[in-house]
Length: 47
Ligand SMILES: [Zn+2]
Image 1: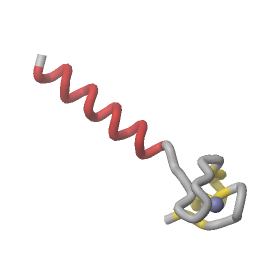
Image 2 (image 1 turned 90 degrees about the horizontal axis):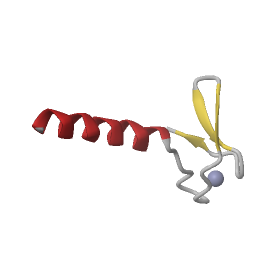
Image 3 (image 1 turned 180 degrees about the vertical axis):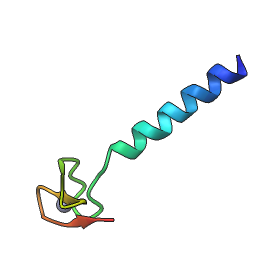
Image 4 (image 1 turned 180 degrees about the horizontal axis):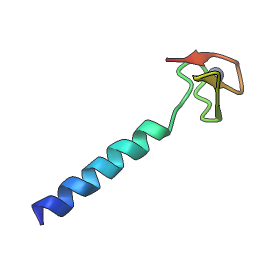
């Protein structure tokens, strides 16, 4: 049962990592281009 809990935690972390949000305007519509993430609303490059 502990093992199952660990797997669920890892999935949550991975999912949170995929959801990127622009720190400048809060937009979540992020585009990946040239190995970098761009905000499609204001054009900010995310780290
Ligand atoms: Zn933005």
